[in-house]
Length: 441
Image (tube, rainbow, N blue to C red; front, top):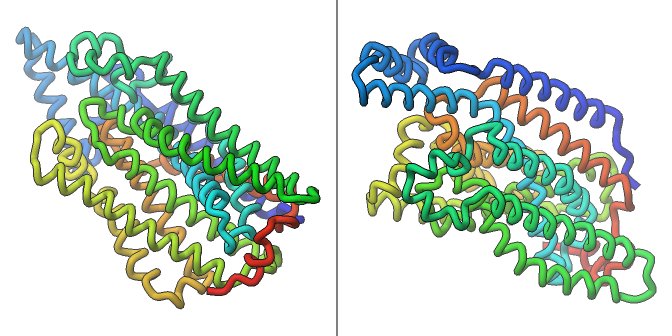
C-alpha cells in the first residue's frame, strides 16, 4: 500500500496556497473601469505588446466628439477593458482545463487498455486510476467556471452576450447550439458520463481483486468498449464548446482530434512520470524498464500524431488563405510568436530528437526530463488556444498564470497521490497480471 509522504503533501499545500495568493492578486489588480484600463495600457513598459495599444488609446482619445468615431472609440475602450478583465479569468481557465484534460487523457488511455485487453499494462492500472480520480474536483471546478461565464462574471465567451449576438448574424445562426442553457446541459452530460465510467470501472477493478471468477473483468471490458464510443463523441463536442467557441466566428473540422492528441499525450506523460516516481520510492517493484519504454514510446508516437494534426490544420487554412479562417493564425503570428513557435519546438522537435533513440526511453531521469518539457509545451498549447480569443494582445506570463499553474498543480498532486493510498498499487486477480509482470520488449 502506498503511503503519501509528508514532504509531497506539504509541497502540494504550499503550491496551492501560493497559487491562490497569486490568483487573488491578479483578480484584484484587474481594472474595473475604462479609465483604469486605459491607464494600465498607457503605463505598459516600452517595447511590450501593450505599447501599440497605448498609442491607439491616445489617438482615439484625441478624436472624441466626431460622431461615428466617438462610438468606435467607446466600443474599442470597452473591448480593451474586457480583455484586461479577462486575463485572470483566462489564466484560471487555462490551468483548470489543462490539469483536467490530463486526467481525461489518462481515462481514455485506461479505457483503451481495458477494451484491448492489453497484457503489458495491468501493473499500471492503479496508477491510471489514481490520476483519473482528479476528474471529480477538476471537472467540478471547470463546470463552475463555465457557470460563472454564463452568469456574465467574465467576457471570455462573447456569444453569451445577448447584445453582441443581436448585432451578429453569424452568431444568431449558431444560437440553436451556442446558447447558455444547452451549453451547460451538454457540459453536465459530458462530465457526468466521464466521471460515472471512471467510478464504475474503478469499482469493478477493486472488486476483481476479491472475486473468485473473472466476471468483473469481463464487465469492465464491455463498459470500457462502450465508453470509448461515448468518449470520442463527447470529447469532440467538449473541444468545440469549451475551447473553439471562444472564437465563435472560426471553426476547424480537425479541432476535436487536435485537442484529443494534446490531452492524450499529456495524460500518458503523467502516467510515465508518476510510475517512475513511485518506482524510485520502492513501490511498483514489478514494473520494469520495458513498461517505462512502452510509455515513452507512446509519448513519442502521440507527439508525432499531434504534430500531424497541427500541421494538417495549419497548412490547409494558411494555404487556402480564406480571411475568416486564416485570421485565427494571423492573431497568433502577430501577438503570440514566442508561445506559438515555442510550443511547436517543445511538443514536436524536442520529443522527436530525444525519444527517437530506443535506449533513452528506458532511462528514468530522461523520461522525467522529457515529460516536464512536453507538459509545459502542451500547457502553452492550451494557452495559445484560449488567450488570443479572450485577452488579445494584452497577455504576458505573470502572477495569474503562475498562480493558476501552482494552485491546480498542487491540487492535482494532492488529489492523485491521496487516491493512490486507497488501494494496493498492484491488482491481484487481473487475468493478465502475470503477463504484465514478465513483460519484456
